Length: 520
Image 1 (cartoon, rainbow, N blue to C red):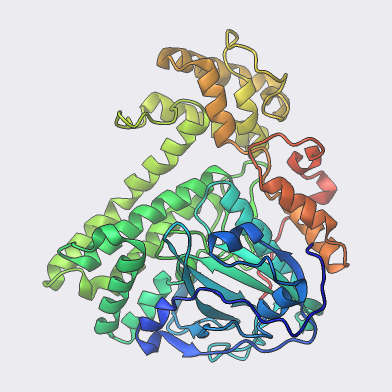
Image 2: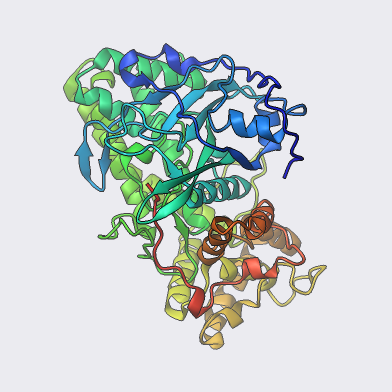
């Protein structure tokens, strides 16, 4: 925590706002200001992210930070709005949703030259609240902070967390819970549902404006495209396929992959009932609201394609001059997503097994060989049959190379138990390991390079569900230390960390979490 220096008179430092979103048609937003809270207290602040955003906080007191990032003291130059969007929620279309408990404070250009938007989540009712209180409980705020930063450390494009502030007020859910507010940072909060909102109103001119807005800020290579809408749709599809393949490779289950939770800029957004696989079960579902298993682990790539088809429908008026040609082109794009998705996922899995190494810039990546594809699918069948832990199994393979592989500097460089010990029947590993060893020999990759690549691609630490829940329970009882310790471990997911061994362990039978909740 930062040192507390009570000073309510110090000015709230300036954030270098650019407020690009305000350039869009007014139909996409509504003015909305944060509702003041009783007693804001800073829980955590991401100083490194603040520096990336060009926000200098060296002279800020903890009270200043709490006041600024609860909405109690407006940041000079901010022009807050709530965003309008629609969405398919579990397959059912709702023509108007919108930010019911969040306000976009504005956007900045970070030190890398990328636009980043700052949003307060849980800051009170907006014109889109639909009878909700607009507030967030402490648990969901700290969950999103923890998981979004963990996803960033895993190398997955994601929203980020800048600050979490407790409000000193209770929010009423099934029972009174301590309230909190998250400051979320994202390249953009435009979603598939944003385009659907305009399409439902037959507002083609605003769709064109939104296409240009996204190209200028997030897809500048498309500025000279002859058909900007078509070029944007294809680029969004490419990013989304790659994104979902990446999160599948670390065992992530989004939980609510509705079209209003699919960001056009290509990053993960919304961490309500999300969870991570432990025992490998392809149809695993944790979200309490996903009663039909729509977004189960292995359903996520096809449902991503389904969402992209809804985006294509919404963008149809800007995909070409002739509707029939635009429709045929969009259908061809959507039909090709299955092959793209399979290739992206398989390519990443082959890299996790050391079958492909980091590409030499002078070479063209090779297509996935059927032999390698069979190794991937057979390994996953083995893990499912043996009820093995997904994360530890993949991590442990870095220590399970061929017998003539030079020894690692550490007896178990992976930090994971030996692969065979993770199976119910250790002998079940023999045949698959033999095939894998032969394939590595045939490929001729240097053994030490294989090990190094695998250790860099297979995390040891993920936000295991029981650890997250225990940390949130501790925070609700006033003890942030378990949350802080887990957050620190997850910041370096690929490095073996002394004293953090329990953060790599699967849940014991009495610790298992079978349901997660969004907290709205």
